[in-house]
Image 1: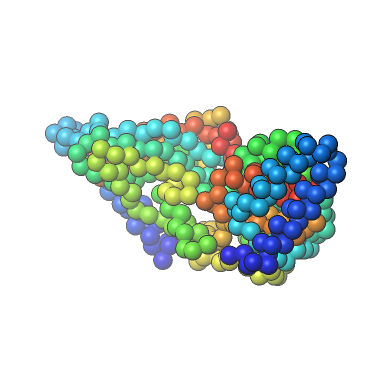
Image 2: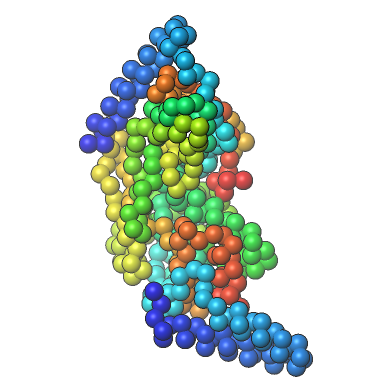
Length: 216
Length: 155
């Protein structure tokens, strides 16, 4: 749960945004906007507010084009981070499909959003496999990221993502237990929100717009 | 452990299909036949040879609950009934041997719950295709069900 300091900080940010907007508008219109926008910003988030509770977006991994990629590569974008794996027919594609609905709801604003599918199964998820996977959903907004076991482990620790490989079958296949939360980072790379599988695409799109307007 | 479970499923599956074939010659054994139906059957296609998930809503118009006990397909080398189980914030898939369709009710084999795990496609399967999956039930009934193959986003 967010602490008092975290929520007052996001309220402070929202007030700043409202103040800046009012300068650009005629007094009466601005007054009305201020009232609407600021009372709106004072509302609790529909997703879980993690501002101040998780570290900034920071990693060094390999992108699905085989090139090195870092957290800084996504500054300027609102970034949705999902830890998954391709040999996961149910929860992972369902989460990605929900994020596709979010993208559709955002319309033109979706251009400012990137979805990072970070593999917790780097042994099987090569850049090529991830490229085909994210491309099958949305080559425009989704990127697949993988790395060494150590890179993935340290990243998972950083964001407190639990994952575990299950026992291998005779044919070498195995399942992975993992958490299905989606982390939202703002354009400055600050961790802001956590979306779970109980959050609807509408709620995610709603809060994403707030994050985008907040940090525009 | 998992290997043993699988072997057991295969054995069960064979026993059941033998039973089904025998039962076909004894219409009296099919008192409950025709009470089950399948709706909205679809497969979420994934690229390459990744395992895919099949979803379907099963309806039981009968007075007795019926278990889905066997799944197979000519299009895939391996089909299993799986369930996604949540444990706090993490989730994992487990193989299950049956799923119950309640009397006068439905069982939704839907994302985040039960799913049919479809592996080792025998020929190239692509969105827009239809694949048939045989669903076998504890009352001896079999539904040969066409599943619509959809893009990963479900569209």
